[in-house]
Image (cartoon, rainbow, N blue to C red; front, side, top):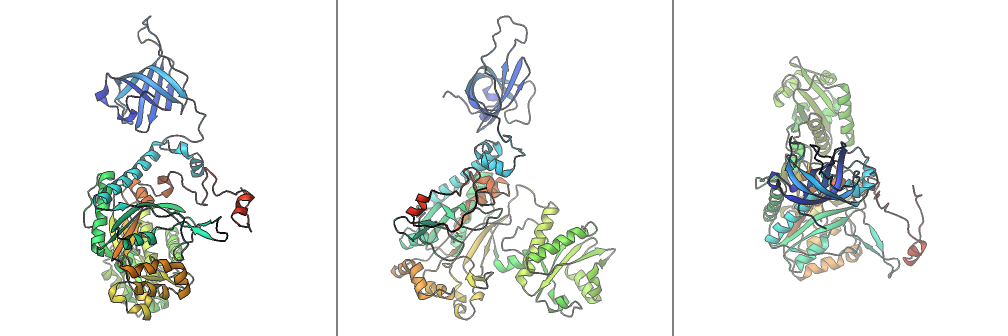
Length: 589
Ligand code: ASP
């Protein structure tokens, strides 16, 4: 099809040129003698003018051939670029327009169920059902372009640094730990299942044992979890593994990749090296293992002030922390304080204790428990000023206390609009605990079972495993965990020990990981790696907080694809072939 230019690339330089353009009718206005068409292609929009009557009653005037047009019709336009009398500042090409000599209809369109514009009032499920129309919205194209640019920057950087892109199987073995697997029944082996990979973790480590030294893959991963705003059941990681480097070298090499991504996608020069914050410091200062450090309200330890407190809960607490929000005491309503209590309850606290500095003194119902010494102590320790709001939280678990105040810190940053758009805060959080206790009270890996414990903590594996720290790290951007990884165990016996500490029997270890730890016996190099969450990176760099905005065909919060209606039922013959009986069936809505 003849086309000389992309619409959004035309500039004043093209004035006087004959052009042939194609695209969709984004808008049209029929003024009788003049028809204006905003013609859109992926590069942008240009105004086309069809003059249907002579401006000066010229009898030889012949109106250009032009069909009836409607929104989203696909057309081809032959014409000449001219300067516009009055520039349209809202449009990148607003200084020029194309005066048509002929408009050809290529395809018609029905009235679309959503407005094809950056602003649309369509509900998300409608947008997802008609995703192919939603994708025509320039803002959506911009997001997918950002995503593609990120991938390209990674490919270039990793290639320049000797990484090989290698694929790993999508049909693999279900292994415990982490999230629930998506299972795929085997037809040829009745009663047996493949699992879709939660990540290529084991395979990429086998690449290292296989001597490939530097691997990466734009890897599709699958986790059968309940969805949250920034999660999808199938998602994409930039998965990376490397041999013979220590943790510092890994972080240095990987922050180089981020620098390349930020430069190519955003034109931003990241200041390297990125900050490295220990997990415990992150929790104690920001109340989060993925802190956004673009704003203050850091947590402050006030526990020593309350050892003699008249308030029993504080007297017996093992942790009491404070957050001070300046200049808002007067304006803070009961309703806001109630919301803070709700946040605190999510972290197993009964609530928080608010205090205000008003008229030079502390006010609030909690003051009845405060001695003069404690009051003076608070003023001094927190450098309190008029109109400060102080939020105190105490409890028996320091992590709960910190995380509750961390969530409150985010609450105020958002409600006070302290986060400037298009600003980026990147840091590594390092030195995580190796294990954590899950909701069922069981010891589980905080990262995964292959994470290398810190050498000095190895003796604790037997005596007090929860105290063991790991050579693990997360990359945090604007308060999101944008990636994470670790140095890996490369010693057969240590790996075996970890499985044991996690409560696996000899038989389980053999069945589930036998092939893996056998490989450790044949010369395993020290190695480590990480995975960047591509969807999250694209989301952050696109300035949206909805992960579905940067995935072409995402699932909704009910794990359904509104476009294809997946998951669907299948023919009885199909389940029979798989030797599977359906014992429970949801009604189709
Ligand atoms: N496989 C890990 C994950 O998906 C990342 C890594 O350790 O490389 O979280």
